[in-house]
Amino acid sequence: MAELNGEPVELGQLQTLALTNYGHFTSMRVDDGRVRGLSLHMDRLRRDCRTLFGVDLDPQRVRELARRAAPATGSTTVRVTIFDPRLDLGSPGAANDPHVLVTSRTAGALPLPPLRVQSTPYVRDVAKVKSVGLFASIHHRRQSQLAGFDDALFVDQDQVISEGGTWNIGFFDGTQVIWPAADCLVGVTMELLKQAHDHISTPIKLSDLPNLQAAFATNAAIGVRAISGIDGIRLPESPAIIDTLRKLYMEIPGDLL
Image (cartoon, rainbow, N blue to C red):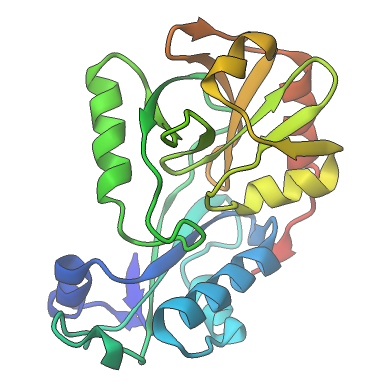
């Protein structure tokens, strides 16, 4: 399904999005009509819309449009993309009429198998905005897969770990959950887990990995996914903390979309 402002989308209406790649989005897993962290998704859309287009977004209207793509039963991933179809490459400062594109796909079963990831130097542009500009994330993911890994893990020039291409990363040192203190996009699932379980935030470098007992990836589509290896370092695939976090996350009640 794909609708623009509640109407079937036409190919020409997507031309600007395809050619300029300027906009923002959020992806929500909808289970039986409910979304974990719905208010956080709406807050993200409002915040990013103000950053990219300088105008306010009506969250109630967005919910109404997104609801059209979500069946009352079953699991679906609904993506809400905000962009201005009239944006001109030469004068982006005039773009101030964001439209709401809603797309959906069947959500996969959880949990997913562990990830093996490869570190790569990269810091996203305007990291706090969930931008539609996914070129670098996809490029680094592709390069990592060609090297025999499942995905890429971003680090800065000092090898400080920040995030994956489309997910956040957390660690466990045997005593506490650790979220990297770094410039990254703070995901909704990450925020919910911070509320559900004690944690600390501190910079984590690649050189710190041998002292850690577990790592995991999080986003709305995958929930909590174990990471079994980073570069050449192997990590336990099913430590108890990951089961604990997964259970806590799945027990968070969803809000009606």
